[in-house]
Length: 123
Image (tube, rainbow, N blue to C red; front, side):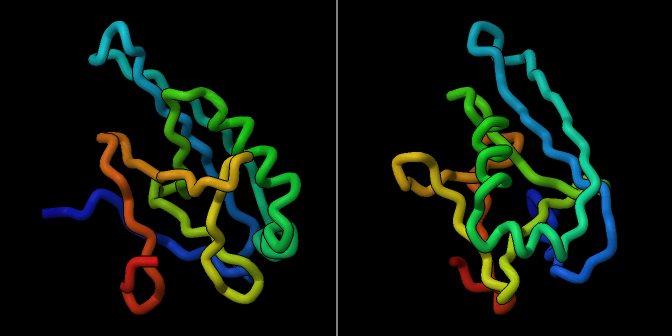
């Protein structure tokens, strides 16, 4: 059985790449209808690694895209593989909402995705 996603780690020195932010949400009046929008941007991950040290503007971008209560935000590369976000020390960053609660990351089937370190241990 194929796993629900493939984790791809983008290290700080990766060349310029296109990354898609997919926002999926389901219309509650019709569970069959699924709406999605994609925002693509090019990012130099050396710049992003420095930016992530304080989660300033990137956090604002993530929160603005995930503001709807019924939306799940996934970050995927151009091959639709899920990206892990790491800081300049290669530590995986936790993403928290304004109340400092950890945000759950879910796949398109609303299954919770586990985030694992390089030794395949759940973080």
